[in-house]
Image (cartoon, rainbow, N blue to C red; front, top):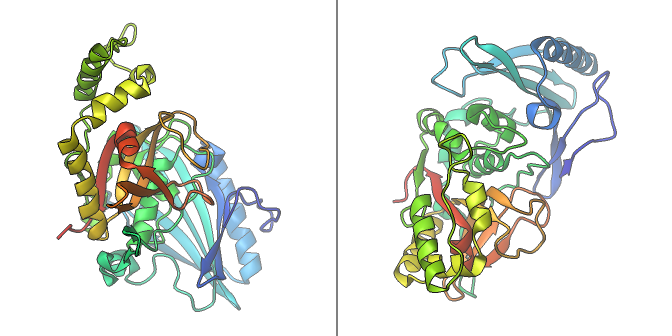
Length: 377
């Protein structure tokens, strides 16, 4: 349960986004953001240090002690641990304060990413403690999460919700959901955004997301791969669209670069697409449609969620989306072969956990399909 701005203070600190964690239908802890760049914007090193010092003092007073420091290396490409923290074990609760500061540019300017507090009952495993960082995801075969319904629906259970809020963190939230599904629930969207150098307003560029593939592989033994048949070639899409437009006697779209540059604005091109023409261009080839669906089916049957990049605003969706138009990233978590539909979920919290879409509509809006998994065998 997400509270964007809770009505309480932690000593001298006013928390931001706060999550009430739930296990077996009961509250199991709190995850409190004392700072994150996505919600609060960038702050300089001195301001972050002051906020950090205030937080440590407030928690020490609450817990009745100085606590113990810990460090955790989540990115093997860095010499030092990129996550540090302090943990207090008090009567009735354990407090784990974690923070990350990235180094940006050739001058390695400090860039504060987040300052997060987890409050858990005494005896509960602290986030990232013990062997969870290296073994957590291998404890369960992903195929054990596959559920088959009498109506022909096949879907993945236990995919956790991560609410991105008003931030353009759809990609970071999507990866956090997958990591939680595999058992790495101590990784949140803010930490993943720091790997991908995400921008909270403009979202996460897919090329930036590709850059974290090394972290996923080297640290967590996960492979980030493109799904065959996902129609990711933008220039081929424009070519097919213009052929369909010519057949239907509709205006063709232009690939002119932006003035004074050699860069093509893909979003502007998508805005030129007419849904009826695009549908003709993308769904007329039944062999390609079948390949698209079959690859989704194979992934879900293996217990692997599909990272689905889309362009919103071309087909109606229910419930209404917070984002009217533009690029977005979500998860495909199931399918129904009889009805030729897919099941998907968005990182926007309640109401967006489980939704369905016709296959042709899904193909219409797709800009990419990828998976994060150990193996599909």
